[in-house]
Length: 116
Image (cartoon, rainbow, N blue to C red; front, side, top):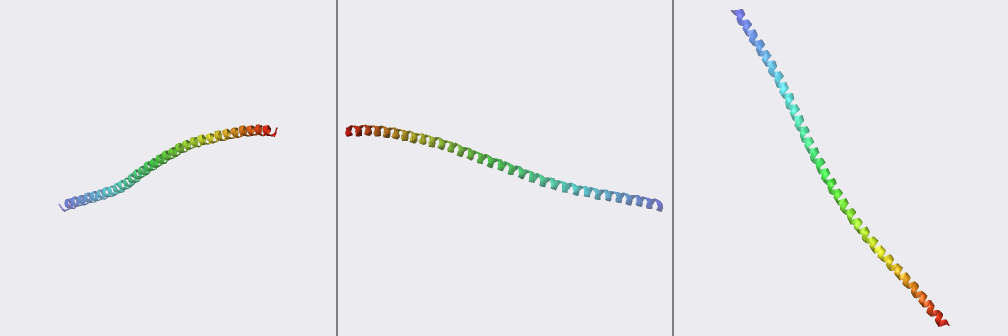
């Protein structure tokens, strides 16, 4: 019976070693999976932050673009107004010069009359 007990004990010890090795392998696998999960969670957080940053940049760019369009529109209106004022000044200047020429001719005609 002693041999049978030794064999049974050896089989039980072998089985316990096998279970222990299996448990250690499972623990190592679980640790590796936990590390992978933490890495993936970190990457996910970084990706989410990057998307928020990109969205913020897009909003700022859109805002700046709208401001630039508004400034351009304002400058175009100002340019139209300045052209209108310049045209009005040119017209006044032409009218003044025409009137001055007429008055000079009129004065010249009167000067000629006075001389004779």
